[in-house]
Image (cartoon, rainbow, N blue to C red; front, side, top):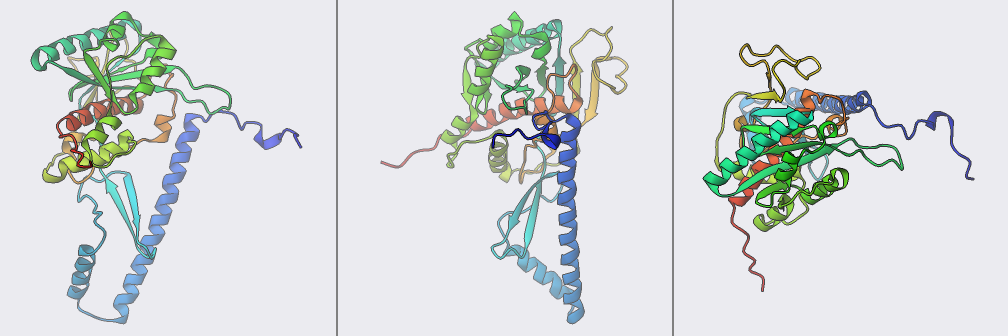
Length: 359
């Protein structure tokens, strides 16, 4: 008793590498695919045997399938633009399984990435100018706010400092600030501490606490989307950003019809034009804008209204946010979180508050 375990468990406390996280995700996807393929083969075999036993007209099969569909669960998959976000419904007798695949909520616009003090100051000035213009036009301003940090997988070792801060105030631009390298300059601090600018997010108080502990800067004027949702939706619970996205945007889109093609998102690196693009292997820059890099990605503007989901891939979410330069996937993940926070806030504010009829 009390003898330390050695041998193959010596690296038990070693943190996962990004490659290992990717292998875990790949193994999960492979296992899911094999299971679904085997179920499809079994279903096809049963259908073949059923038809071979009774040579009935094909129209009867069509009618039977339509009738089954009309009496099935209320869950119904989107008809187009499906993506890897999937949910399973299993009937009470475990005989049939219905898999939903919903399109992903994503950001369409410029992702402005800053990693040096000079670049972060420039982004902060742009945000301050945006805020002042918004105040003049609308009287109030709300910014989607989120942070990322490097997790720790070693017992007794705390997670890393707040490494990335993302801020979004409209559909056009999202700022991703690599504050683990730049710190928080005075211009950015003045924006974060401005009590007239509302910062919105799920459990945003926890993010604000971490920023204050790690960088000695107070983030003021916080609005928790989970608490706001409980005032607006007749389904009180502790919401996550993903669950609130599915709940609210499915509700919002139930009466609308949208169509289109995958959108174009831009990554704008905040740097001097004489500098090399700060991306591991960036695509060719556009002729007149060497600092503007573009890549295709799904867009919220083109998604069908039946359901939206917010993917949280573990290899990105639990990845190295203290890297020298963030990957394009990390930039898109960070920008989408801030954008979704801002977007959900606008949607929630447009809803009336629930009237409590209980005495």
